[in-house]
Image (cartoon, rainbow, N blue to C red; front, side):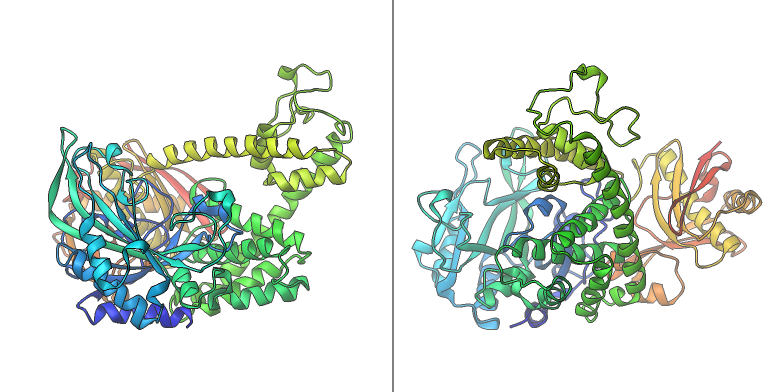
Length: 639
């Protein structure tokens, strides 16, 4: 059974049970400062899980595009991917455990014919300290459905509890959460005792693969640390399409399913190597996964850069290049592989075919830029490391450490002399040139540097520690990211946010309708607004745009908000970028003055002033510059 069949059967199965298909949101999350990408099906639905009414009702279903940057280093085994589709269904205060588990079991065992003998399930074991009971109800339901007690396991909150904050003790007062019940497929492979004496569903030996998780959001944390029942009990199910397809075909390798078959064939053709050769599998999987992820990111508006989502895109393209080189794949093949992905998904995600030329050009250009960076990195190794052939960790060339710093993210003003060949040094080199530890060590060994096996183990451990520090800092930074481009919803930020809508309308009036928003970053002090345009905007044109905004402010245009179907809004000429990011029902903000003049009409989900006269001060464009190919940036203030 292929993935398209499973996706279609899943959606139809739940639509027949009263669910509305809400489609996939964009990989770029709206109004969520905690993450760069949509990483789960529930993420775009969080307001509705917290009690807000969804326009489509209380029963929802979809297949959501997801990307998890934290899984990049895991890609290469038989099950991890950065990009995946999450099949999801939700009950917003409607049905609960009995219906959810029964329907899920029916779908798995009857719709896609997975033998029930292959299924194991896990449930929450409870927390006596916090007063949260053991989820015996879910276990009893599974048992009645046909899962014997020996294939039902209980785990603590680290495995079988969900909340935005993680485990119950980490949840703030007012935060909702609840136990979950996970479904695992048993491939029956032999247990590897290096993962523990006994095998179990959450074992990492490869025998079991999680294929679905039903979250029962039924509690809210109180100020005193206790838990009370939620007035609205919700169901949030998510199951990876790729993993479910692998289970339906009884093959533990997700890269053997139909979604990867054509790109794996293309890699074999370009490399003249076989995927079946165990020595090649890791490189094949990384290339296939990363090109697929890059295709979907670019289609949803991400461009390679050195920050945020653009950095992740740059990283996966460059990592694909590195592994393509290992397979002796010539320059240019990766961009060509992206067309295979676009064709594979053309019926499910129509924007891929529309953006195909842009996608291939972006990947090709980034590969070219990276090859120049590789040359620079290799030249550093060529210049410095013949002298360091036998340098041991902690040794120098006789140069005091404070005189031989490693220059990161900038020019090398001094000789690039290592004060210590340790994991931190290699991580810094990786950050500067994109060289993974293995690649740097491999290049050094080619040049005569001798590494003992224990030294490589130490380097890997130290490198991983530095990576974890970096990821922690990145997470802290992500938590500070702006909601929908806004630092906050304060009065001054709201004024500038509304002003950027008027700015876009002015740009389109002056420069043409090919101008669209490409991003924004707004604080109480200034607005930074990115837009599509192929060339520099001269000052006389900027002055006209600036005047348009100030005229709109003086006109006293009233705010009007409509909730209409997305396709209706699009067909009626409403301005919006990356339509795929939005749900089936969208909010359209229109600013119209008393004379009937429309100054701005645009999709949005953020806060706005009620009348443009509420924008205090004169709008001033203080800078215009390029930020990427075909993307310009304006910085503006209210003075």
